[in-house]
Length: 121
Length: 321
Image (cartoon, rainbow over the protein chains, first blue to last red):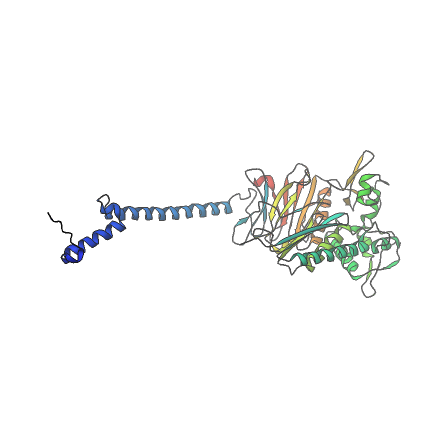
């Protein structure tokens, strides 16, 4: 019995194109080529992941921005409204006093650690 | 962004540590600045030290009504002091020197603390009437004090010294001149976006009671006065260096320290003294020419003293916690 092997260029055009597409698919999507995954599902899944990532980023931005806004507007003086340029005293969770000024934009600016220290001599 | 180069060095003069911090300058430039500061400090003591018999101040105090030659810098500081006496309605008054000596501060503070004694309880203060009789001749660079008047320009002279050095180094990107806790900052800080200054807790020297971000150019001169360091015993009596010009005695007040924030250190120094004296008399507290001041009382409570648009405003620390 004689076995004959046909090369691609000996095949009809349609079959040659189908073989070429199968080889390309095996290279780019081996699991899909074996029938273990459907490209439509993969695309849908990746789309969902992208949308979740985007939603997470927006939520994170809103949370951080909101925290900053709250920190900048918290601890108003109980004895009266702070005016622009006025200095007030706030105490943090650890009992440390901070002298805070309200700037022209209405933000309260405070300093956690001193560069220098004033004292009597 | 990397932190700018920062150089800091210290030396001792006027019985305090002088620290000069330069931000964004070369080590060589900082070394030149330190050398300049040392020369200026020596010249300052030759003018204003009451413990150097040959200083301009000592010769003026010893002149007993005679006319003394001085220089322009001396006249500038004396004029600052005379103006401050008027601005504070006599609460700040360098003519308390006889009373200060009577309380025992008649030698350098190191010697007083090593061997305290008091010559008496009080001595007369020339006060506003004395200052009205001071003759300042700018053309001939001379000063004449009334015969009974002697002055101590220590605090305001030290403040003016810091202001002078800060002006000399003002073209640096940033810096700080600190003379024993009286200090002035400008420009770029060593880290962060603005200079931050701690206020010492008078009950725990070295510890900070509060911190302020110095975001306003009107505050860059800072001075603190307190009774926690220059104090000594005379028998059973405890004395300190802060004298009420009205009584000629060490003042008694519930305020343990006052820190003022002003355009200049000299102005801040005046405010601290005026607030302490006003407090001891039960008078309203006024920041004078400072933007504001922070007082800490003996129980550790902090009070902010400042003007709002039209009227002084006080905000109690405990109300804000």
